[in-house]
Structure formats: structure tokens, C-alpha cells
Length: 241
Length: 305
Image (cartoon, rainbow over all chains, first blue to last red; front, side):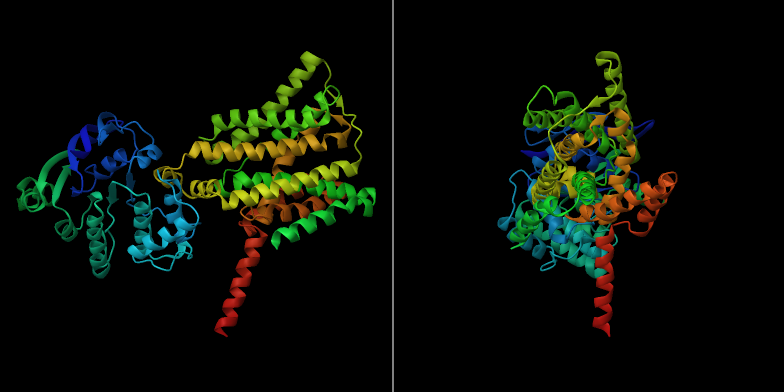
């Protein structure tokens, strides 16, 4: 049974169709890459799944329920968590409070001593152990990304949406980042990741969906999709196909 | 330990009326009144950074409720009625405005004050045919002082509780980034409405308790928009995100404004405006935060030396 189902999902901004009739299913436990050139509609698709943007047409289902049309807080309570393309830390809070904010308002909330222990575990998991009391705005870029991941995990998601979580990292950080996401596989979390870093996509994703100008142009096992002529054309231009 | 210290301070303050003359007592009442308004204002506007100029709308409603009902109802019920009216108006206004952000919210709350004042004026002129009202309650200044002291203590206790509670965290998350807040499962409208209402009820009560001070009340007195601006400056001066910040901002500014309005009645507004600009530019996070950052800089210097 599929965890997430997009059915003919469409988003129009005035005359521009950013996402055009997008349909796909995610099975429980899958790690799927959502690829495509800039402006192909990947982030818009993610924003519709998390409830940040309303759909112009189509529907989105989670397990046996339609979630399109629900506000983000309701979708979050049904098990969808995300990170943002440009890291959205809560700068006036400490690192620990950033994670606490997710624990305290999730479906099965944690507060007080139980939350404190969970914060320490989550921060240790992402490599920020012992830094709960530091102000969030004092973190480096990679550490902000780690914190944002810990915050998303603190929501106890069934589906995790990662929007270019690996972008802007140097090679060493990238390696650490890939290992971190790959470790999430063991938790049984289904992950949909928008990504441009192809090494990461090859290492992490069993399946890839490719979008171009708002439409899906490929969907299948990673190696096959990345070899697909149409995908190469979309990314690199006709001469390379 | 801290609680004991707070209770001792409260007890000591309760004896002030028997120790000082009428003029200092009047000043203390003014400080308490503005301290309550600034603390209540910061309860909502501190973490969310929604600058509300509706303070005096609630304050004035409280005062007017007392003026209208004090001859027909026993005093405790009058206070209860004032709180209820404040709550209802806060819920209505909140539902209508809390989806607004930034400058739109500021302007709406400012407009609201004017609207409430005009509605009260209209009602008085056309329905009751009396614009001014007299408030005769058997209260001396010391009674008003004690009630305000109790309200201030309650307000600080609420502010203290909010700071450690889930709803306080929710409010800070919303202030930082409402998009993140909603994606973490926070019901933004409900959280904002709750805190806005608590803050508004406190403001209404502050107005109700102080009504007997004027003896004669009319809309232009109790709905004076300058009050709303003063409260904002006071909270910003002390630091709206600290428990005692707004109160500490209210003390020097109230005394300064008293002195200015006595000595420079014609230039009062100009000085007020300049002061407002100076505070926003020089101390954007308040005096307490500035003191902290200076102290941090000094300790860093010591450590490196």
C-alpha cells in the first residue's frame, strides 16, 4: 500500500503552470529522489505536499486520507515533516529549543524531562551532541542544516521531505550528510528528497522521479532514470543526448 | 527563594500608601498603571513582534464600563463585566486581525482604537444623551493603589508562567517564523488569539480600576491614543522579551513624561516623538539586553587580557 499518492497535482501561478498534472506514489520506507532542472516545479510540489501552497487542481493522499486542502499544522500531525530549501532556523531560540518546538507540538507531544532526553538523543544523532544550549543563530551553515534535520525528525514523521538538504556543503560535509540520511533508512522513514547533487542521489535513492517544466518526464530505478536520454536532454541540452 | 523575595517585595510595596504623601502615591499609581499595561502589551507583542496600538481601546473600555455600571452593580461584578467585555472585544478583533501581519496589523489596531472611541461617543450622544460621566466610588487613592498592585502581581505571574509554558514557546516560534510554526504543528491562530485575549483583559482591568481616579470621564480622556504609544515605548525601552523589562521601562518614562507635561506642556508631543525614535534606533532590544551585551563584551575583554 502506498504511503503518499499524488494524483494529477497541478499548480498555476497566474498564467504560469509551475506543476502540471503530476502523479506518483511513494511506498512506505522508500527513499525517492525528485530531480529536475531549476524551475521545473520540484519545490512547488514539495510545498503542496506539506500544505504550504494550495493546489490548483488534483489531490494528494496520505495512506487512506486526502490531505490536500488541509492547513500545514494538520498535515504535520498526520506525519509529514520537512526541511526548507533555504534553511529556516528559529534564530531567537536555542538549538535545543528549535528541536523542542517540534517535540512539543507534534501529534504525541513531549514536554519537560522526557523532551529534554529526546532533544539530546536527536541532536547527538545529527552530530550536534551537547550543543542544545547554544543560540541557533551562532551555528555554521552545515550545523543549521543538521539542526533543521533534527527538528524535522523530532516531529516523528512517517514522510520526510528534504528540499536540497545537501546543497552548499563541501565534500567532507557532503559525505557526512549522505551517511546521516542513509542512517534514517533504518528508522523506516519514507523520504522524498529534492536534490541536485548526483553523487548523493546515486548513493541514497533507490528510485528517482524527474520533472521538467512542471511535468514528470521519468520515474524508475535510479540508474535507469539517470541514463534516460530525455533526462539528459532536460539537464544538459540536446547536444549531449 | 525567588518566590519568597517576590512576596516580600509585594508586601513591602503594600505599605507604601501609609508611608508617603498624596503626590508620591499618585506617581506610584501612575507607574503601576503603566507597568501593568506595558507588561500586558509585551505578553503578546514581545514574542510575536506584532506591534499593537489597541492598548488604549481596551483600557478605555474598562474605564467606561465602570463609569456606566458602577451605580447599578456591586463593584466586584463591575470588574467582572469589564473583563468580560474586554475578552469579547479581544476575541472579535483577534479573529478579524490576527491574520494580518506587520504594518497592516499596526494600522488596524490604531484604527480600532478610534472606532471604539467613536462608537462609545455615538452611543452616549444618541442613546444616553450624556457625553461625560461621573464616577462616584467610595475609593481613596490607596484602594486604587492596592488593586493595581494586585493586578500587576497577577500580570507578572501570568507573564512568568507563559514564558515557561508550551504556549509561550509557540508564541516565540510564531514570532521567529510562522511558516515553520505551522509546519511543526502549531495552531497559530489559536495561540495568538489566546495570548492577545489574556493581554487585552488585563488592559481592560487596568482601565476599570483606574476609572475612579478621574471622577469625570469622557471618551477623549480614556481613549487617548498617546497612551498606546507610551506603552509601546516603555516596553521597548525596558525590553519586551524580559519578564521585568516592560515594568522597568515604565518607571523612568512615566516619571519623565510627568515632568515634561508639567514643564513643557506645549512641546510634550515633540519630545515624545524624538524619544520614541531614539529608543528604537539606540536600544532596539531594550536597556536590559544592552546592559547584557556590554557586560558580555567586558567579560570577553577580561578573558582575553
